[in-house]
Amino acid sequence: MDAEIINDQAARRRTFAIISHPDAGKTTLTEKFLLYSGVVAQAGSVKARSGGKSARSDWMTMEQDRGISIASTVLQFDYRDHVVNLLDTPGHRDFSEDTYRVLAAVDAAVMVLDAAKGIEAQTLKLFEVCKARNMPILTFVNKWDRPGREPLELMDQIEDLIGLQTTPITWPVGPGGDFRGVIDRRSGDFVRFTRTSRGATEAPEEIVSAGEAASDEGDAWEHAHEEVMLLDEIGATHDPKTFLAGETSPLFVGSALTNFGVRHLLDSIIDLAPQPAARETIDGAYRPIEEPFSAFVFKVQANMDPSHRDRVAFMRINSGHFERGMQVTHERLQKAFSTKFATTVFGADRDTVEEGFPGDVIGLVNASDLRIGDTLYAGDRVAFPPIPRFEPELFWSARALDVSKTKQFRKGLDQLDEEGVVQVLRDLDAPTASPVLGAVGQMQFEVFAHRLEHEFGAKVELSPTSWAVARRTDAETAEKVRQLRGTRVLGSLDGTMFALFDSTGRLARTLADNPDWLLERVVETAG
Image 1: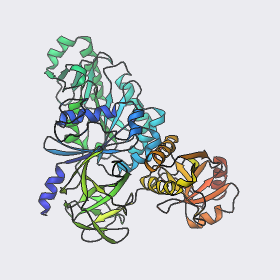
Image 2: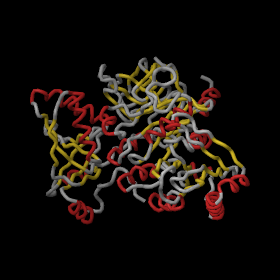
Image 3: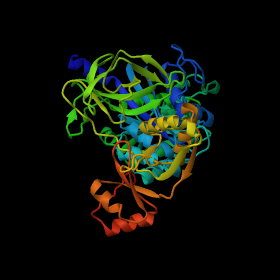
Image 4: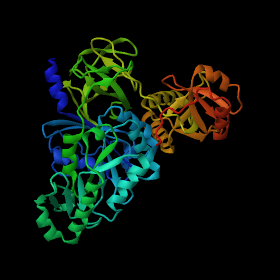
């Protein structure tokens, strides 16, 4: 296809993720994006305006029972003549590894904060992960219709905890709980909001001049206006260059529940977030978007459709023009791969897709050979960097309660390992030895057990082990670690070797005594 067409199509794409802590309103905001894009006629409706698509991004039964996001999902919709690929991420620190994989596939992120809680300790790692990738981040302070912190205090907290300077684009008029509207710092106008019944339809917006706002809103306007002048004085103004470098973050305030500020945020995703650009390959070069088709797999999900027991591999297109049925090359296996069963994804629903362009996320159904991090390409060989798996922080053993279900147990173990639900760590010298399950958080084990029982028919018993900490290592160091007491070396699905220690103290002593040994964190997120 002509390079000009590919570039034009890429310019229309915006591919971003939403990250937040639980109960910050991420799923509500996602639904309101669908409302403002016209995908659903009324927020809270079960069916969409057309196509019968569900407005709910949390498709897993366990998610709906608990009211939290456990698995990342993909939603694609049109807005302002653009194609928006929205990836909804898990809303809990325990699934920060899944969030990291999603961030590898997007060009920007929206960080949603609760106005009363700000950045909470248990989900700080989610935002550190985002910052570690130098990802352009837009910040949305949600629930401003309720009592909360002062906005200047929230700005300070964001900078103190994750080193991200916020540059407010909209600023609240009226304290939390008495939200009147926002000052749009780009125009200086006051945008007054009017509530709608249960936030089911778009919130009416009235553009009011500064003079009229001062007369109508009184002290609330004066207080907000003084804070905006302070922002001007300290230079907290949007700068495209530092935003794209992941150093500053445009900040918006609103209430997803009542639709206040949702349009401002969605418009700014189109106006400010970057379009797809050349992606770095494993050899350090960059693959221009007009080059022949290339993509990489960032997520694998089984049993999204329980009636069919299928397996979907999600790929992000990095370059070229994708056509369903085209023959491409599977880079890791170096063999031909058919894309006949390609779908667009909308939560748990899907439709056959005929073509795609850079930035699009497409599902490949029953692609059993594909793993997270795999590259697909047409033309000259290309490979994109692998997506690292975090070093585990919790280590448990698992066994099937019913020995007659051993086959189902092993099948589920392999599948959930490939998906990244947990890491299955195996003894490379004794493949038949019982594996150790590794996870970042406790809830991963709960999801593992739930899915093994309900999707594979194998109830399991989980038990903590004596291992306390793991570090990535290599073959040379592994041989030396094996000579120490209180250690063990295991390997993960992607070939990474981990040295396990029975205490953080033993790890610290080993590092102090052997500074030349390779014992490192997989992903550094702090600071």
